[in-house]
Length: 365
Image 1 (tube, rainbow, N blue to C red):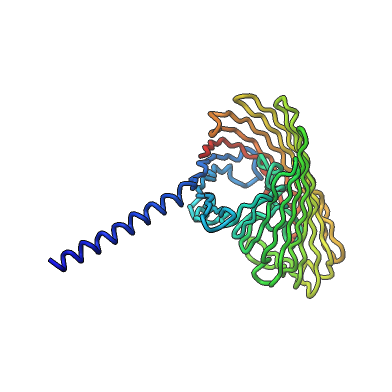
Image 2: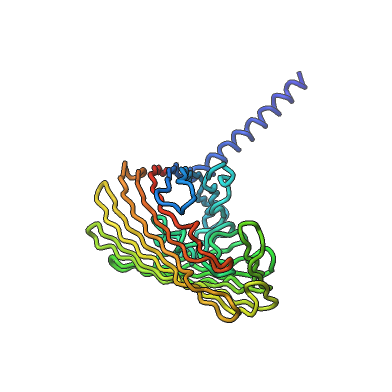
């Protein structure tokens, strides 16, 4: 009897703890949101280089995430957090949880502070609205600079986003740079909206990193012991209030080289390249029509013997989109790319010239 009595008391204690834990867990998940998108498109090459296939390709940009805000009794400010998967991709390998913005932070009256895996403030301007629809192949990650274009999303990252001060906002971030050099990057962006006009400006300095540009077979084409990469972007958009909306931006990319330089970068001290983006769209209650144009000018190299003539690239895109409801769309795109000469292999980059037609469906939740 005594043993049974003790077991009963123990069971009651465990049950009470479990119930309390469940209640606490429930209260901590009241402010958790499940969000994401189901987004799949099908693409066909209607105009491709001679000898290439008119390949049919399915692009799966579906992803999912969790985010929340939690206020604690014994701690102020509120804690904010997010865990987001990457896009599914062709074989699902990119869809791992945490591949996109995944962070924890704090919400203050003056703004929010986050740390973890995040996009940089200056890159956010590049990404939206200036790469849509389908302009990223030229305006975003594309460049002939041996050091590459810029960091977009990275871990080891601290970021501050201000509140809105009568139309003015700003964001600052810093974090660890590349894996091979113990450096820091710095990124900043400012935005101002008045009426239908919005202005954007961003700057990013990525410190020092070794440069080793390779071809498709992993053979080195250009090497530098130290490369200092940076870019700035200026952009504007205007909403006319009658369905018309236009955007324009310019991005200036630069890399400076020092230390030992080999192959194509022998005696090269600096490379620069500029990119432009212009879009125009018209919206009705159910339809959207959008045109996009992006280009890079020829690479400009200081020192060395690189032939950087005819290295500019161009993208022309168009979209017709139908709004199934506020959270779902179906669209048809045509995207044409004319890529310049390959700087380092000194040959025409016609293999990348193509015109693609695609249809897609996107549902947001």
